[in-house]
Image 1 (cartoon, one colour):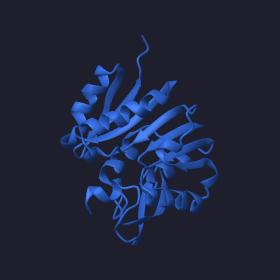
Image 2 (cartoon, helix red, strand yellow):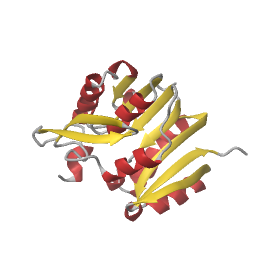
Image 3 (cartoon, rainbow, N blue to C red):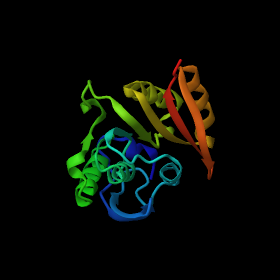
Image 4 (cartoon, rainbow, N blue to C red):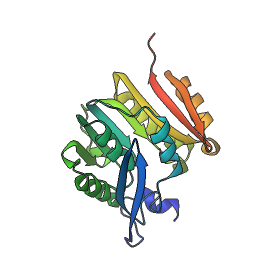
Length: 202
């Protein structure tokens, strides 16, 4: 599947349903996926690394999943933190529909807000941001994406990002530092970097 499909607001490829099964934190998930959505045939390896190596929340808060796809990160965050509200954003309408369906199926729908990026309330701030961002959109576009959403972190907030080393993981790390963020590479596995991003404290 070409990158053009899952970056499109309205995927041109026909919808073909699949079920993606995976486990995180002792819980098993079975999510509906479809062609025209990122990594529709499996749990993306980068997402798997992020969910395994990031510090999953256990308490409430307001979280953001950037580029939610069919919703694996969103659903895990909402399940692991029963008091949390999770905003799930994606430009792809099919991805948003699948995330809504999957959250509802898991009984999480009342705490998941699935929106197009421009629909996020301007006043919303986030205790945590999680993302396996779309690196194939290009370096400039990826940086623009980070510049748009990372400033929405709460003062003590944290962002967890996973980036393929061969698709700019180290250069994004360096750029985020240049932009004034504290960035720690907390894990490196299967060619992916897991980055913890926070505001500078001084």
